[in-house]
Structure formats: structure tokens, C-alpha cells
Image (cartoon, rainbow, N blue to C red; front, top):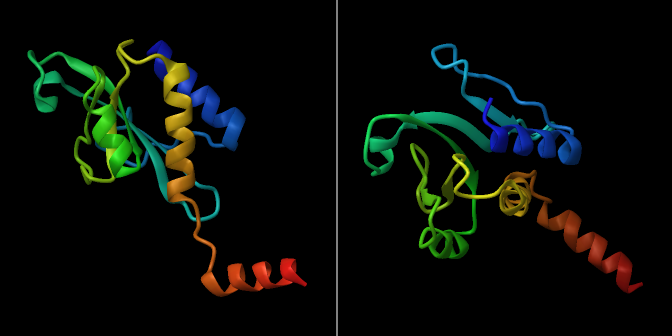
Length: 136
């Protein structure tokens, strides 16, 4: 397995107690990281031909798709190793090359953001009640 991919999977397991699952019977090497309660995805690991990412060649490359703030995503895509999301909503998701172009340590905070952006939303009424209690 790819070293960067292993490090990111290990980080997710340690930080979020998340183990990868392979939901696609036709692509068992694709992994998804999900929230335990909602089962929402916060990361998708795939390997795709480079030419599908707008790169030269048809050799396969490991990638990671994460949910990302659209403003940050736009800035990151100006850097090497960050691309518009492959096969996902390109405004809200980002593809990261796992070929060593981007270091695992740089991916961890982005994975954290994806986890936060995809977690279960707090109901507005519950949040307002909590804020009112704090004022008392």
C-alpha cells in the first residue's frame, strides 16, 4: 500500500476511530472513511488513470477526495498535488494526489476539516437553548 495512504488511514483511525470500508463491489481497492453516527463520507481513497485528472499518461495514481471549504479549495488548487475533485462536487470537494507530491502532515488538517464539514449538524433550536443556558 502507498505510504502516504497508510499514514492518512492510520491518522484517521487514531484521531476519529475510523476504519476504512470498501463499499464498491466492482472496486474493492477504493476505501471510504465515514462518520460513525451518520455514516456520511469524509474521505474517499481511489486510484485512477492520470489522464482522468488532466495529467499526462494513463498510469494509475492514488488520490484522496475530501470535503473542503470552497475558498480554501480554490487556493489549494493553485498548488501542485491539489486538483478539482475527481468524480465529486468540484465546489465542495478536493482531490489530493497521494504520490508524495503532498506530505501526509499537510493532509491531516485537511482531513480534520473534511471530518468537521461532514459531521452531524446541531439543530438550531438545541444550539439556541444551550446559548440561553450559558447566559443565565
